[in-house]
Image 1 (cartoon, rainbow, N blue to C red):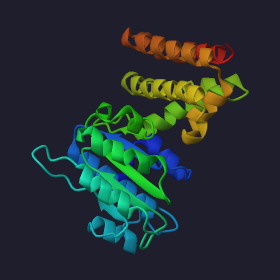
Image 2 (image 1 turned 90 degrees about the vertical axis):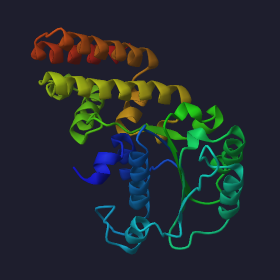
Image 3 (image 1 turned 180 degrees about the vertical axis):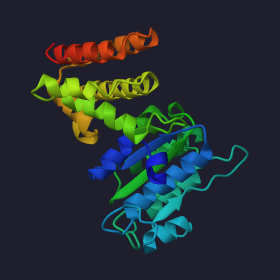
Length: 282
C-alpha cells in the first residue's frame, strides 16, 4: 500500500479516481501531523502533472508541493493565544481567490484547525466555499468537524482519518463489492461477494465499512446528491429505497452480532447474503 493509500480515506480516493473530487473537504483526526500529511498528499494528487500513477513525486508540481513552495497551494496562517486562523487571514484568502492560478488548473487552500476558528472567520469563509470564483479546492483540517458551523460543514465532504486499517484497500474493496453485488440482477454474485466473510476480525471490519456505505446511501437518497458519492454508495442510493436501506443496516448489525457470538462464519455469510437480497425489494 502506498503512502497516498495509507493516509487518504478510501472513499475520497475513489472520488478522486473518478475525477469527482469535492471542491470542499473537511478532514477529521486527532493527529495533527496525519491531517497535515493527508492534505499534502491530496494536493499532490490534484496538481500532479504525470499522466498516470498520481502523485508521481517527481514532476515539478510534486517537487514544489513537497518543498512547501508551490504558488497555487496556500496554507492559512494561525496566530494569537489559541493559535487559530483569524478573520483577517480569511479575508486575505478571499481577496487572493480572484486571481488566476500561477501554474495549475486550480488553487488549493488548506485551513489548519478549522474547527477552532471563531464564528466570524468561518462565516467570512462560507461565502467563498459557496461561490468560488474559479476552480478551487478547500481542505479544512479538524480535530472534530462538529466545531465547524453547520452552514460550513454542510458544504464540505467530510472524511475521517483512522489509525487502524478500517480504511485499508482490501477491507473497503470487499465491502464495496458486497454493496455493488446487492444492486446486480443475480443473487449468486451477492453470495460470492459475501463469501469474503471468512475471518472473524476481518469480517467485522468489512461489515463496519459496509454499514457506513449503506448509511451514506441513505443520506444520498435524502439529499439527492448521488453524484457526489462513491460508486457503491451511488448505486445503492439509486437502486434501493430508503426502507430497504434501513433494513440492510439492521441485517448488517445482526451479522456483526452473530460473529461476536461465534456463529459459524459460513452460516453468517449465507444468512447475510439472503437478508440483503430480500431487503432490497422492500
